[in-house]
Image 1 (tube, rainbow, N blue to C red):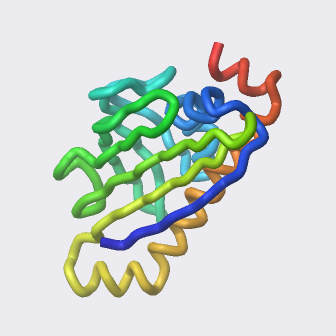
Image 2 (image 1 turned 180 degrees about the vertical axis):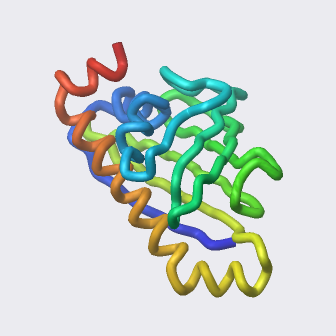
Length: 160
């Protein structure tokens, strides 16, 4: 499995960062460049344990769908979302979101693991472009989480 690990430091309370990270509405904002929409399951609000969402987006010029389910959940420390088997372009995908309180600020750690389909061809795509694409997607997402979390006027529009 390919693995991407990112640490993002955010000047905001852990609860705010946790909730923004599980917000369907904020995810739509962070992925607007892919025209990503929630089309099934939880389509707005905050993801809860056991809930699913199906995303439809355009990546590499191709319209795709991906369904994920929240499999692990401990407020405000971590949650994990995993691709529903057979419901996405990956052979498998798991995204762990971990939150650490550091004197009123938050360290957000993402561990994103995925297995590309198509065996050797999928692994070649990982090395050539997919891993970089996914890393940049996550960096952009975390920048939006940080932007909103550090501005009470912005995050209150999402969380209230």
